[in-house]
Image 1: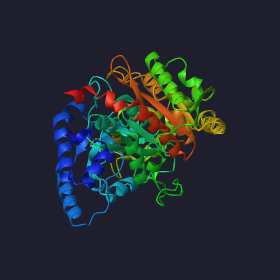
Image 2: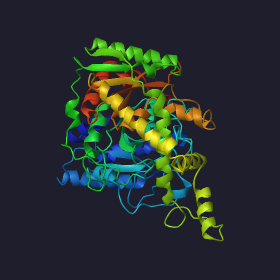
Image 3: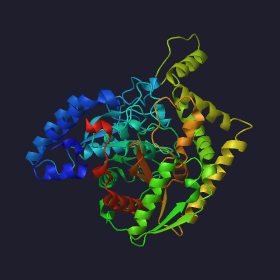
Image 4: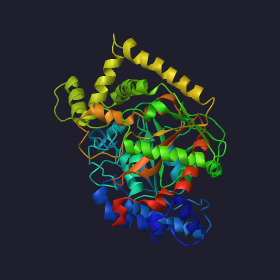
Length: 490
């Protein structure tokens, strides 16, 4: 039995039935990391020795009846912009290369209190700015389906690790598609919850009105299980909503009869790869066969969303990253003779090119004389985007789009062309602008055996609806039974 091939729900049952111990599970993943991490480069920091000791301790406590959680002793990977007490939280940046967080993020606290074992911090685009995980200060992560291609970003380390079976599941963050797009590229499930459903306390901010933590998993059931753990009101986060606690696994009914699905034609227009479009059309036919009502609709926001997103995101990034000044914490230059040089040189040395690009753009759109023309206008368009979605959800339960217009591209082919890289987010950013939930699930592979992702968008706090729609398709299509990354075949 290949332990690392099992989903978390399967691992949970095997622990419950005493077929596996936490030590056996953790050791299987550590062995896998030792074998494959050199190829994938998914981790910034590994915690293998600590994880094994923790697993042994959990097994002892389970034997004595001290542990009640059925998920205790199952490993997890945590994206490196989510604070972990006593462990480096670098955001894959030189600026925070040696930063050890003095506290846990709320989501970290929740997974650890459930007894999950932190296997390490996952690589990412620096400060979550990027769509390929090529902008990490430490290393470029590779896609397990083809090591010459990118895993997507910014949560590329998390998605690649789940796909390569280095962790059973992982936490990522999504500002404009940073969970869903790498999930699409790596053939796994990525869920971006409704803004405010999961606490952002302890998430190093990129764009505060857009950022959201969510799960990256092998299947939809695991995504629902992890959402159960991390969702909920947090008084430490002023944007956290206080809504009734739910068990999202109960929504997985494998039935979409009567479900109304809208397919926005603008998301299938010019720029969408032909094979991606073909697989999405096949998925639409599958939903029709399963009893859902599917109709083409117009959602005339796609052409405005990308520009709106990058104005708002860069403006907020410019503001949020102002705290990294070489004085309070983070990288401090050795080359300065006055305060101005200390600021300038610390930030010049500490930030990479993509972060600098977005800070400059954000500072520009917030500057006197340009604020009304750019930032204020973008916020007005944001309101229109929300209204367009709200109008669509008056008639439809779910909206179906591609997650990405293409499959994973080769490393190095877009990293020097920012505009082309930004276009990778065109199908996902509008969901963040409107604060909606979205999930990406694999719906096939192209002629080169690279995975293709389908995005399902729901109304605010309608995670149950999109989880069930995704689960029903997953049960019918059985992607994991048909396809696996090339790295997992060796």
